[in-house]
Amino acid sequence: MAIISCRVKNNDDSVIQLLNPNRQTIYFRDMRPLKDARFQLVNFSENELRVSLSNVSLSDEGRYVCQLYTDPPQEAYADITVLIPPGNPIIEAKDEVLSEGNETEMTCTAMSSKPAATIRWMKGDKELTGKPRVELTYDKMYTVTSRVAFTVNKEDDGVPIICIVDHPAVKDFRARKFLEVQYKPEVKIVVEFPQGLTREGENLELTCQAKGKPQPQRVNWLKVDDDVPSHAVITGGDLYIENLNKSYNGTYRCVASNPLGESYDDYVLYVYDSRAGEGAPRTVDHAVIGGVVAVVVFAMLCLLIVLGRYFARHKGTYFTHEAKGADDAADADTAIINAEGGHTNSDEKKEYYI
Image 1 (tube, helix red, strand yellow):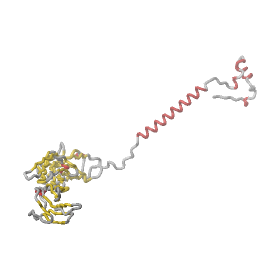
Image 2 (image 1 turned 90 degrees about the horizontal axis):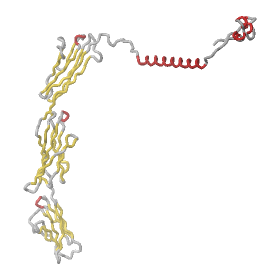
Image 3 (image 1 turned 135 degrees about the horizontal axis):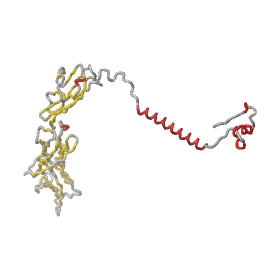
Image 4 (image 1 turned 30 degrees about the vertical axis):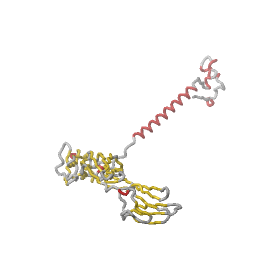
């Protein structure tokens, strides 16, 4: 509904009338010459003529004239713009089912709007860039088509592609389509038992986990470059070997396939002695021992250098007390007799030696 109001200040009983864009009189004072029941009188007085227009259509768009019969006549104008929201957006995909790594494209159409709508694209929470095309139809309305192209991977499976239509008459008008992406299997081998070293006499249980789209219907176990032990039990994705011994050493492979390809995962089996890892002596840290030895050797070298420098400084000639007076004596006996202090008493003889 539109409300059209014509107001006059200080009216001197002049006649007020309202004209449509085709200059046809809608109301003359409080009378309606135009035979269109959608126009209804809301208020009439000397200063105002107010009219309502219900069920507005595109044909009602244009300039409306408020005319006051004076000399000369006076006019005022009001423009009505009619917004036409688009119909429900239509989203179409080139491919319903996609393969990983393939490129696809989608289109989204917003029909019969005024003005032209704008279209945005989202893949999950990531915005995509589309290419729009605008067409003006025969009834002066617009149809907008946007096209987007992108490459898919396995993470896109189940992700929604959303077409968002923006228009002054509506907000957040959406259509969505979920991607269906097929991809080859992902394979992983899980050791159920034992936890830790595999020793002789123990049992081994491996589980092959395979995921793909379409889901692999079966998996195969094999031993690379050899046969799987004859008494090994294979149940679905599980491989069970009892009473391990070293002849079972090797690479065991789980293979899964679907129409898009084949994948595998390997498990390398090495069987240890039955007592491996039990009561083993503590490992000696050779680095620590080497460090200690280096410190000791360095200390000894430093000590030898200090002692060598000490003896070099104190090098000289030293005499005992017995040698004093020997320079003037004719023989050794005379030197002893002439020695300082004498040596008549053998108990008082002293000798110093460095």
